[in-house]
Length: 108
Image (cartoon, rainbow, N blue to C red; front, side, top):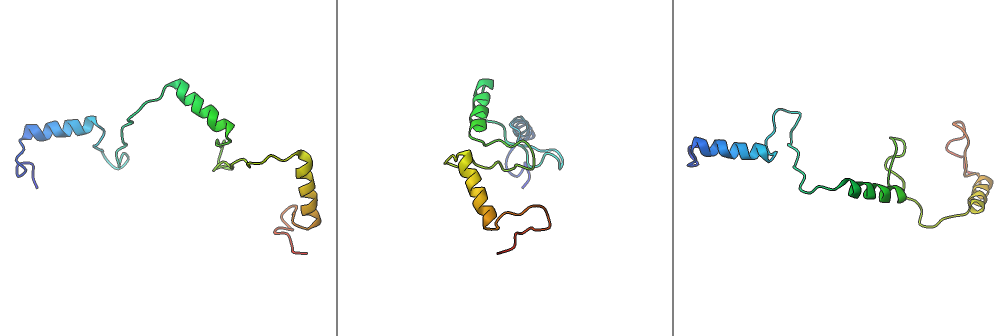
């Protein structure tokens, strides 16, 4: 349907196009398709820094590709002695491998 068939004048169509460009609803070429939606709300630097501190404290940040997505911290915290005891039990059961030659660990 052409603009003329819709009953709009050339000036009306140009005004609508200008408004759409201003609102970020028009893309130009392949690189900016689909057009990015304009941000509706803005945060202050202090708000962003507070959110960053909360995410860091919750262990929700990653620092590279190797730890993405960031692992969630366990709800319970174990002591060093508890972790060492679990490791010793896993080694005794043959559940721990070392190096490439014994991976995956063989069933004993």
